[in-house]
Length: 121
Image (cartoon, rainbow, N blue to C red):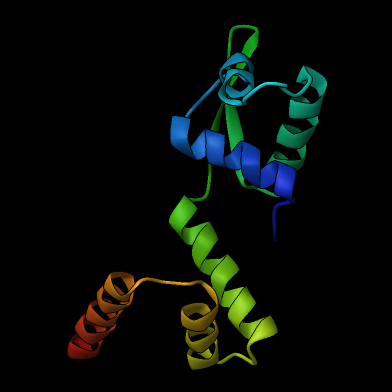
């Protein structure tokens, strides 16, 4: 299951905060801040999708993520590779390195990461 762009933005705030009540989440946004009802709707949708849950504390709900950011991002990237690059990591890597204007230093760092992974296999 995937998050909408608005849900991803809220989820990023929650990942950063680790746990938060509604006020904390709204305060995490830049101005103009979303309406409380908007954030409540997004939280409900994210709970139904099983990305978050909450703990009742008095009259407040303390929300927390059920999925780690790395896990979500990994599934998202793997979906991109499957759907847009014919399930080919090398096609994705080729596109990524050619179309993102990476510096020579950044490319060398990527090469070092790939070389390290090759040694592990």
